[in-house]
Length: 98
Image 1 (cartoon, rainbow, N blue to C red):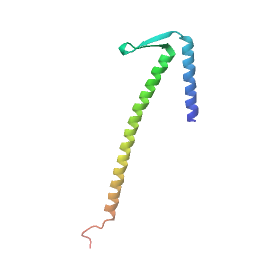
Image 2: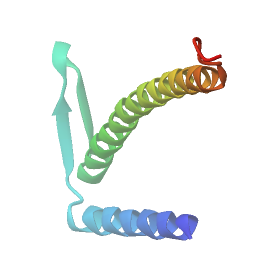
Image 3: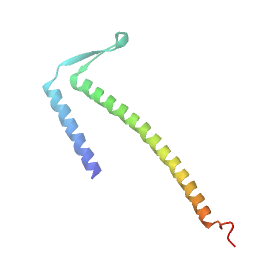
Image 4: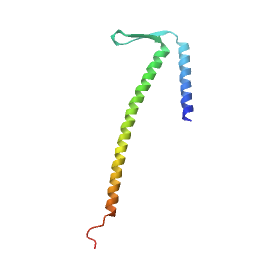
C-alpha cells in the first residue's frame, strides 16, 4: 500500500513538472557567488531547488532520529538495570526478622 501511495505521489510530481515545463519554456539564468552562472529551464531550476531541500530535510531528520534512538537505547538499559535492582531487593531477606 505504501509503494502504491509513493508511486502515485511520484506520478503526480512528474505530471506537475511536465505541465509546468510546457507552460513555462523560457530559460532562466541563476547567478551564483564568484561570478558563476547557470542557464537552464525554469522547471529544472525548481526541481533542483526542491530536490536539494528534500535531501537536506531528510539528512536533518535522519540525524534527529538517530539521536532519539540512541537516547531510547540508553533509557532501556537504565530501566533494565533498575528493574533488576528492584527484583534483587524484593528477593533479599529482611534483616531483623527471626
